[in-house]
Amino acid sequence: MYTTDLSGKDKKKSEPTPLKQEDPKLLAAFEARVANDEFIEPKDWMPEAYRRTLVRQISQHAHSEIVGMLPEGNWITRAPSLRRKAILLAKVQDEGGHGLYLYAAAETLGTSRAEMIEALHSGKAKYSTIFNYPTLTWADIGAIGWLVDGAAIMNQVPLQRTSFGPYARAMVRVCKEESFHQRQGYEIMMALAGGSREQKRMAQDALARWWWPSLMMFGPPDDKSPNTEQSIRWRIKRETNDELRQKFVDVSVPQAEAIGLSIPDKKLKWNEARGHYDYGEIDWEEFYAVVRGEGSVAKERMQARVKAWEDGAWVRDAALVHAAKRTAAKIAAE
Ligand code: FAQ
Image 1 (tube, rainbow, N blue to C red):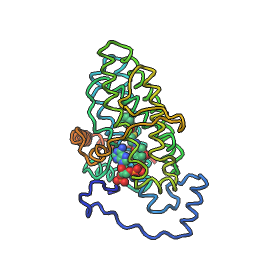
Image 2 (tube, helix red, strand yellow; image 1 turned 30 degrees about the vertical axis):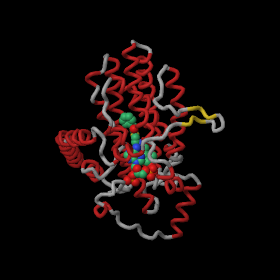
Image 3 (cartoon, rainbow, N blue to C red; image 1 turned 30 degrees about the horizontal axis):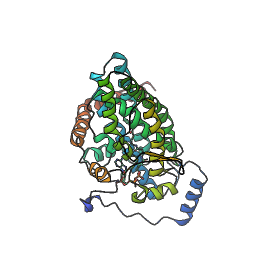
Image 4 (cartoon, rainbow, N blue to C red; image 1 turned 120 degrees about the vertical axis):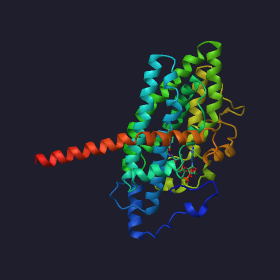
């Protein structure tokens, strides 16, 4: 529906309707506003391709937030203390809230929430590859907070200045919450790394499994990214996939060193001339396979989402009936 199909399958069905030729005057005025760093608001004129890119990116982002609740939600009942349980519960709820702000931002572009949810459940819409990896131990919850939320913030801080107003404003609150998430994850890793030998081993193992998938979160390399050039031009994206990935590596290496953990990359080395860490080759075959839905828990994730949606039907129905009753009572009282 709103994806660039990477699978090569089902080309006919996913072929988008061709874009119409835009009015050159309107387009020039729009581009001047974007170049002037003005926010574009839902009722403003915008090129069809801009609208589609935003619906694609914002809905994928929303889907990632709510699918992202699953790997951690899985550990709420097994958190090692009441304090850890309360924190994890709040974090998972925050992610649900992020999904809601993002769906609401995408809805302002004329796509209904029902359409977006349908696209997710039917496998047409993407969500971040990172959530198709399993959470095997409690240390994975630390690694997700530290690395996955860390990568998410690195990507989302520049999105606070994305050119579409509702998306930018949603990102402001999301970033505040994500930075708390990142710290709580790092704190779990710090506690484990400074604990018993077995706890340190768990932390190291979690880092080893989550490091490369976290680097993949930033998307394909710039020269293989079909959307980056146009998205940078329209200031939807403010930094490229590779730029953000490099920043993430640069901040994460000293954090790992500070708690005595080692990043599983033999090629990782500070490059004085570049002022950055050099790092090894990412397994892009694995990335594309996970994007295609071949991740080890992809099926399980979607089944859990669909079940949650179906189980929640009575709540949505009840809320609608309640809202209708309130409206009727208000009208009767007038
Ligand atoms: N996974 O041309 P590009 C979080 C797709 S939030 C799956 O570079 P673009 C919070 C891409 O969609 C994490 N697919 O695309 C949390 C495109 O396919 P399409 C989510 C990926 O859009 C933490 C194709 O590859 N964050 O974690 C991935 O310019 C903990 C070509 O790629 C966001 O969504 C991937 N990793 O750049 C929650 C941030 N990467 O659509 C719970 C907003 C790429 O053409 C617990 N999004 N693809 O068919 C973005 O910044 C961008 O969309 C990128 C991709 C950077 C993700």
